[in-house]
Length: 265
Image (cartoon, rainbow, N blue to C red; front, side):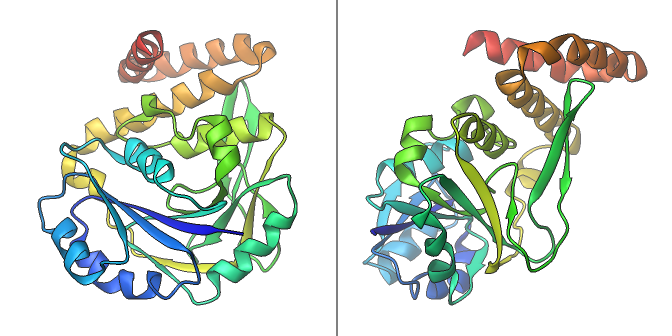
C-alpha cells in the first residue's frame, strides 16, 4: 500500500522547523507540501533543507481547502496522511492508522490530538448538533475526518471530489466531506492509538477579525447543513433559522451570505 503525507502550509516556518524532522521519519513513500504563497520563507526553508519533499508553490494565497485539494492532486499514495503545518506525528502513527484500511468501508482515520477527540452528533430541530466524543481507549465512528490530522483513502477522496472550495477560506469543509462520505456508505473512525501533538497555530485569527471569523464559521456551518440535510428535515430547519434570527438579528448576515455562496456556486 503506497502512502503519502500532504501538508498545506502558510507562513508556518517556525512550526515546520520543529515538526518536519518527525514527519520526515514517518514510514511513508512521499511527502507533499503545498506552500500557499507564504511570506516567511517557508518554501525556501523546505527546498533548502528537505530536497526529498515534493514542494508545490502557489503564486497567490488560495486558502486551506484549495491547498489541500492541490496536495491530493499531486500525491500518489493509496492512503494520504493529511497533517496541519503545526502537527507533530508520533512514531507509530502510520502503522496504527494503516491497519484500518484493510476494511474497504473505511474512508478515513482521524488522529488522537489529546485535548479533543472524535466528533459525535445528531440532527435536532433541523440543525446538526455535534460535540467532542468521550476521550477513552476505544475506537469510535466519527462524524467527520479532521482536516487537521487524518489518514484518508485517496480513491474515495477523488470520488467525492475532495474539499468543496465553497468553504474557502476554511471551517466545516471536513464536516461536509464526512457527511458526504457517510452518505456514500463509508465510515470515518477515530483511533486513540493514532497519536499526534497539535500546537494549533491559529492562522485564521491572525487574518480575520473575531466578528468576521465568527460569520465565516456560521456561514460555512449553514452551507454544510444545506448540502447534506435530508429533505424531510427542511421544515424544522427553516423554523430553527427563523427563531435564531429573531433571537439575534445579526444571525441574518451569515444566513444571507451562505445563501449567496450557494446560489453563486
